[in-house]
Amino acid sequence: MTTPTANPLVSVIIPNYNYGNSIGKCIDAALGQTYQPIEVIVVDDHSTDDSLAKARQRPVTVLQTPRNSGVAVARNTGAAAARGEILFFVDSDVALRPDAVELAVAELAAHPEYGAVCGIYEEDPLIRDSIVEECRVLQAYCWRMASLGEVSFLFSSLTAIPRRVFEEVGPFNPRLRQTEEVDYGERMSARHQIMVTDQVRGWHDDDDELWPLLHKLYRRARLRVPLFARRRRFAKGFESPARSFGTVAALGVLASLPLAVLHPAWLLLTAALFGISLSADAEMYRHVRRRKGLPFLAVFTAVAFGTNVAIAAGIAVGALQWLVSRDFRRLYDADWSAARTPSSPTMVGTTA
Image (cartoon, rainbow, N blue to C red):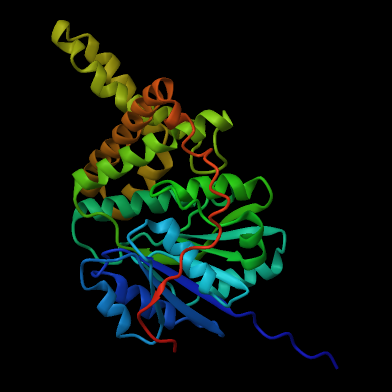
């Protein structure tokens, strides 16, 4: 008689910096998983709010980075301390569905060729603070649903990676405070398949104010330009050609508006560009209308248009910076391979 193989230990790694509003829900959801055995490791990156105190109130391992260093270092610190055969990274503004870990483990077991299994966000926010947040979460849901299957980037806020793959690919680039997940996806997808599935899900507490959201998207788009230039092709999944053209068209809408001062006929160009921008994500807008109705769709369209403009502006500025700055062109080329082990973290909590 064959002895059943024991379930592999899963280490849920939660990087955190000032997410006191959601860290409790995130940890509780990780502790409430249907899968066992599991360990939960919270790595605090020197928060200045009450999130560290909230983490210490729960039966998890709590570590702290030597100094505020960014999410890449926090994830690496958690991975170095983890004992599990599978590393499940989840951001501190995400609360997993109870079966998320179980389904991710099953997917990895069924497909040993996968380097990572990434989940998606639910359609509704974890904490509903504003209609802007509701729109953004729904947009992110639609974009991820359109990316199901193999991709060439990593949704590091909700992803399971076998330890053997993580050790082979190496840690997250500790020099990057932004776009570290895109860099990691580029490195991993050169060796392993990265799969996005709608079976593994969680609720996300996204930005609830428009300007911080747009600024974040602008900054991330700008910092991705050196990677875009290096690979010279569209990514699999998220950055589809149609969506990229739609994003550029959204920026063209704003650029063409001043021409209407010269002659109203130029408004035809503006309308055409706006139509192109909408058609690039036509299924998303149809889905929002079916689920939320026309009044909400009007607000959603305005927020989505703003996000497209911010992304396009970031790419445009990044392209100019790439042309004039050698350091910017080499943003992802620096030799950091020696920094494979984080500095010793501080233990500030207990293990369940």
